[in-house]
Image (cartoon, helix red, strand yellow):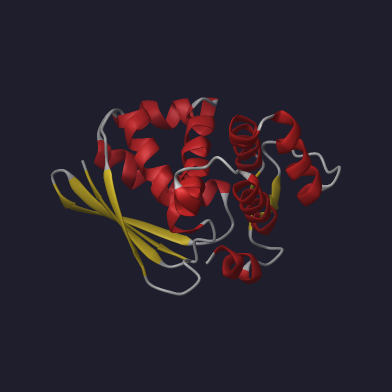
Length: 190
């Protein structure tokens, strides 16, 4: 699925450099600094990444894919490893000033946090549409279309965001609606 999303991404499909920053931190944790740097150089060359500049999502997907392939000790499987990059992105974001403000505004209410996620993603990416629907008192549904990061990444994001900001452990079931994994629904319960 990830290779299909890389091929589907255009130069206009971009996201902020913070995604690269968090992914590099995750690679350093899983591969060690030397191998993480080798992966970065292979994908990005000597290009510098600035946290709040925009870069092609295809480059991030290539970086993550190569990092997962190089991780010989990963016991979580491919999708589990991809979901760790989503978790790392959440941790990196919520440690920033913008993330602290979002956490403050949503408080510890899971529905409020999830309802703010589509606009938060719109601010940091140029691709995809996301909507949130409250299903019950402790459940909801995040519908994603054209989400190039894919379902495994988003599963990590949702679980970690709810844990970090709302202090709840979420169960997330992904319903993928196309072969590339760009259209899916995250069914969330806590």
